[in-house]
Image (cartoon, rainbow, N blue to C red; front, top):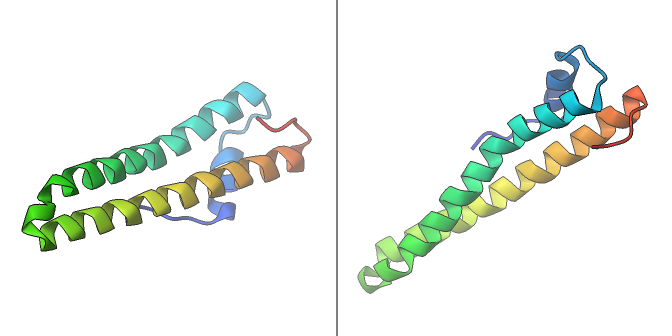
Length: 96
């Protein structure tokens, strides 16, 4: 559930020490892996919460948690995409 800022993500690209677009793409996929898993967990909570609605409170809590995780994951994905584009423009490589 981490939420970092753009400079931390750009710093992870700078730690690569390479301006190769393939290396940048690989690092981007490594960063996106956590957010994609968070998105999967969010959908799982929503799907699990729907049949739990007969208990009312736990079902509502699970659906709300799933919605929160989905929103959080989407924000992380957008942040990683923006930081990758900014870094690529900074070093003069076409965005991956």
